[in-house]
Amino acid sequence: MSGFRKILVLQTAFAGDLILAAPLARGVKEVFKESEVHFLVIPETAVLLKHNPFVDKVWIYDKKRSEKGIGSFLRLMRKLSKEEFDLAIVPHRSLRSALLVFGARIPRRVGFDRSTGAVFFTDVVPYFKNLHEVERNFKLPQVLGWSGDISPPELFPGAEEREEVDRFFDEAGIKPGENLLAVAPGSVWPTKRWPAERFASVIDESWKKWKIRSVLIGGKSDVTLGQRIVRETGDTIVNAMGRFSLLASAELISRCRVILTNDSAPLHLAIGVGTPVVAIFGPTVPSFGFAPYGNGHTVIEKELECRPCSIHGGKKCPRGHFRCMKDISVEEVTQALKKYFIQ
Image (cartoon, rainbow, N blue to C red):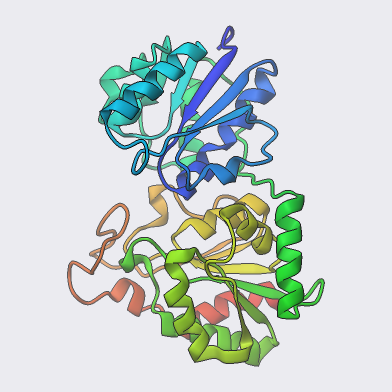
């Protein structure tokens, strides 16, 4: 892998995907200290690379809105071509991503064989289904001779994010060092959401049993869901839904003892700041490679013959019973949380 002075990593999928691809920057930098590492991402996820000491530049591609269409695609291609990258590493498995680095005339282009644009890569790597996504991503530089340690996901909230969370905690009356439970009940995919009323029950139980206050975490699309849970829990909860950027949310999660979450972005935000995770998996399974990375985490799931039913989840249960979520009880989740609060 010698001779690669300027490297582009392209990941324009969801926040969790970027968090799990970002370790490539540290991994490459630790072995090739003089390399410049650039990332190409979408606007919604760019903040996740803020303050990252291993990323030299972030390129933003607003592919669904302001840069939608072939004209914008070609303009971006020309801009990237002028940068004279030596190497493109493409964890994203879309045709558009492969075409972009091919059209930008980047001489070495590494991607997975499951990419719909694999024909446009110079080096094609097998997509190992049995690996965690972090480990799978590191197979990409390995094909070029890279050898080093696999870096875990890391996020780097800065002073701005710390001050923002400080102000919020002051407003909410949260004391420094108070034991908190972060709760992330949302997901882009409806079938990935454990029922809201059960999250509310766990929040109530955590207060009754251990006097642990919960903080609701989520984006603007989760605000209505958060309001519903607040109505059912009252004073035992602090609602931060829709208030923070992804990076500020990570800062907030870093101050919690543990996070309870569906298989969604907050799971990976927590990993990035070292907070233990209790994750509820329904239609998807950890073996897809997106389970909490590292040790000290808990995954709750039910073994059913219909699981997994899809890669991402869906709008409704294909069988109509939604047992993968409904069979997970409030008591089971509360018991899983207990070990994080009762030492």
